[in-house]
Image 1 (tube, rainbow, N blue to C red):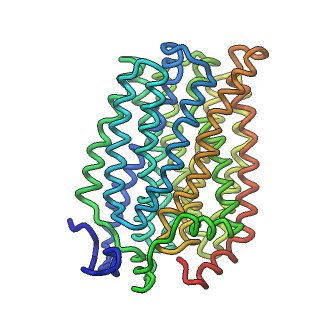
Image 2 (image 1 turned 60 degrees about the vertical axis):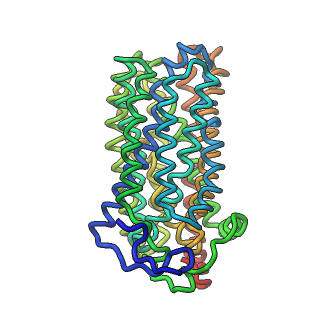
Length: 445
C-alpha cells in the first residue's frame, strides 16, 4: 500500500487533499489501530494481576508496588507523549505508531528477565516510553479518516482496546502466572505486539490531514504550531479544562481499581490468580467493552441534537458508578463484590471516546496529536500516576488498624473521586457549545 492516501508531490508536509477512503478500509484501519491499543493495554495492565507474586518474590511494600504501577510508568508515558505528538503533527504518524508498538512489546518481554525491583522499574519505564508514542498519533489518524459526526463512535471503538487489552492481560496473566510463574506471563503477552507493529507499518496508509473535515489546501498546508500554542488554546477554553480534569479524576479511581482489585480479591477472599484473571477478564473485557462502545454511540446519537450530550452521558455514568463501587468494597462475599463491580467496569473507560472527540474539535488540524497528548498528560499524571500510588500508601497506613483488610479500605477511600469526575463533566458541558462555536468561527476543526 502507498504511504499516504492521495498525497500530491510537493504539498506541504506531504499532506494534500485526500482521494478518500472506502468504508471497508476505514474500518480495517480502525481495527488495526485498535489492536495496537489492545497490545498497549495488555502490556500496561499485565502487572496488576502479577502484583502479589512479585511482592512475595521481591519482598516489597504496597507503597513500592504503587510506585511501580503508577508514577514510575506514568511520568515517562505522559511527558514523552508530548514531544512524540509534536513529531506526529509534522511527520508520518503511521511509522511512529509502528515503532512505538515495537518498543513497548520488546520491553514487556524484558520484564520477565529482571532479578530485582530496580530492574523491573527500569523495564516498566521502557514500556512507558514505548506506549507514549502510540495513542496521540493514532487519535490524529482516526480524526482524519472519520468525519466529526462519527468521531466519538470511532474513538469509542478504538478505546475498546483498553477493555480487550485488560481482558487478555488478566486472563492470560492470571493463568500463565499460576501455571508457569509471573515471568512467563510477561514473555507470553509481549511477543504478539511485534506482529501488530508490522501490520501497522505495512498495511496502513498515512491519511491526508483534514481529509474527514473537508479542509482547504491553506489549512492543510499550515505549519504545525508549538506545544505552548496548543496548550494556550486548549487551556483558554473552560470546557477543555473540565474535560481534562473530569478524565483525570475518573482515571484516578479507574486505574486505582484495575491495578489493585486482583490483590484485593486475593487478600480478602483468597481467590487464586487464575480464578481472578478469568472473572476480571470477563467483566472488564465484555462489560467494560460494552460501556466504552455504548457511551461513544450514545454521544454520537444524542450529540447530533445537542453537542453537550457528549459530556452529559459521561457524567450520568460517573454518578451511577459511585454507589456500586462503595458496595463492592463493603461486600463480605466475593460473588457480591464481583456483581457490584459490573457498573464500575462499564464506566471504566466510558469517558475516553467522547472526551477525545470533543478535544479534537477544539484545535486546528495540525494540533490534533499534541491536543490528545495534552489531554493524556493531565489524565495520566493524575489518574495513572497518583491513583495506584495513593492506594498503596493508604493500604500501608491502614495496616495497623485493618491488617489484612487494609487494601479494601484504601480502595474504598479513593472511590469517592467518581463523584468529583461527574461534576467536572457537567460543568464542562455548560461551555462546550460556545467553545466549539468559537473554534469553528476561527477556522478550527
